[in-house]
Image (cartoon, rainbow, N blue to C red; front, top):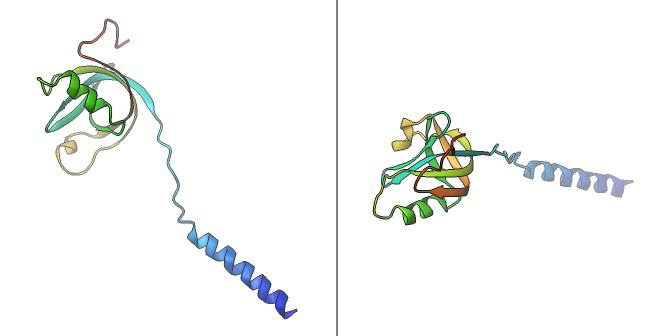
Length: 124
């Protein structure tokens, strides 16, 4: 009988430790959208202006392709706008630096296309 109590106590302890190990960190899935607009990049700016609304967002490039392809395309002209179609999600802007001027940040997760000039009817 005594060995059964030890066994049950041990099981309880293992379950309790397992429950404590779970940090309750929920992986939040961000809702991504496909969006078209104008991307401008330079030493002090990474901006996206949405095609349909004209609203501007600070931009974070988690795809690691948007800023690279922009720079390759506009190597001689920083701050020139390029027409882009990207997939990403919106979140609050950081509380320091130039991004503070914007209510939201567009985090780009995938570059779909980038062009120097806006194609006809691209914003429709």
